[in-house]
Image (cartoon, rainbow, N blue to C red; front, top):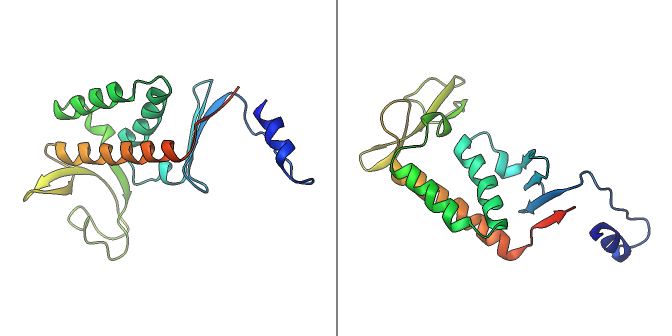
Length: 165
């Protein structure tokens, strides 16, 4: 077992405590990780679980990792990209709900400081614009997912997925 081999290489007094069994883990730095348990449970921590992320973004990380483990990440990304282009993604998966921060101007047109607002990105004057009505900005969401894909691909090249059985 991997744990026993790693434990052997550690100095005396430092012990490994296994918190889960049967999972795939992607670690992107201290307190930034994704655990996909074999029973289907998923844990997102740090930048992967940010409240400023849409449901689509959170699902993308897990879906892309699972597809990568099967060698089907290109197909997964292409289908999702096609779904965005053809507006098959439900708006609820693109919305962000959060409180307007002090001095924040980007969301001031949606409410007042301290108010909780729900929004997604539309296009206004050729730029992504937070709104709560109208069509979502296709190019914004494709660029966003491409950046997450590149992030996961970079992490994957620098580290290894660890599957604990």
